[in-house]
Image (tube, rainbow, N blue to C red):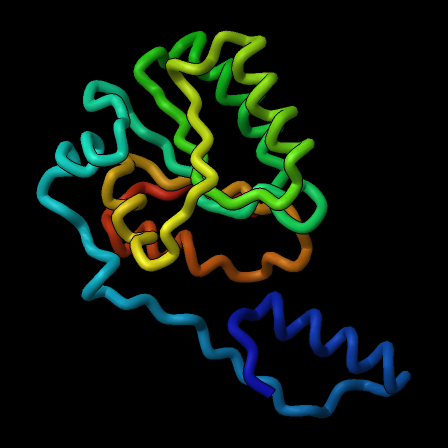
Length: 173
């Protein structure tokens, strides 16, 4: 059995032991995911990409790239709340949330909160995602943020893609 991370390996071993009621003797090998470094690479300047995506050139753009679903992915609302507090001391920060959402009520809740708190100049949600151009979102940003808190997110490829683009990456443990 091949898995992408040590966390996946532990989960598989536990499932097998729980299912068989015996110690796991199956050979499980960890082979991490890779990144296409010909696409996910640093750019000399991200100003043209910031302009292309209508991002503020004079702010530090923090990118969160994930599906917007609080039940199976990150509850981005907590990130939005925390970011609004960060803005009290870091007015030059800008949170760019890029991700599809099939939960229209959740998306409305998020956008209503942003409007109610007058955060439209500092937080933006884009739900039209071009999956063939993920690297350009990262190359337009200054920092990559991955706040995955769901147990199924055992190894995120996006953070290593962000690192490959030369971005500082902020992660949950």
